[in-house]
Image (cartoon, rainbow, N blue to C red; front, side, top):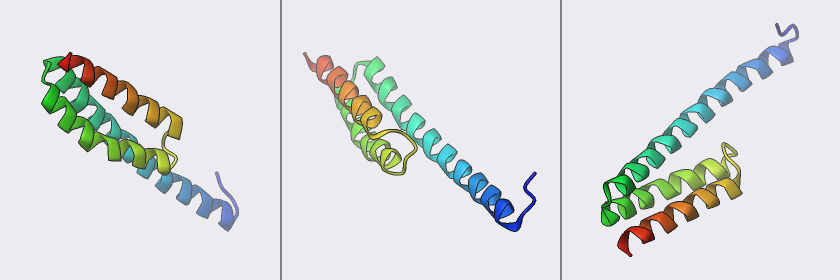
Amino acid sequence: MANTPSAKKAARKIAARTATNKARRSRVRTYLRKVEEAIASGDQSAAQVALQAAQPEIMRAASKGVMHANTAARKVSRLNVRIKALGA
């Protein structure tokens, strides 16, 4: 348990940051799931719309440090490839 006032404050800050990051990560997963479901249904236009909604959320998570920037870019890129393959 934190003993000093500064350690107690640090513990509070960590708890708040953890809660925020958890919410952001959950929101990203929800958007990703919607894109995955649209791809699974085979509807290219719906998948494209879902990806356009998900992409800013994914990039926001990367900019806030919830996920690495390269991970976010890779996810968006791979989803784009899969959506384009639906039309082929």
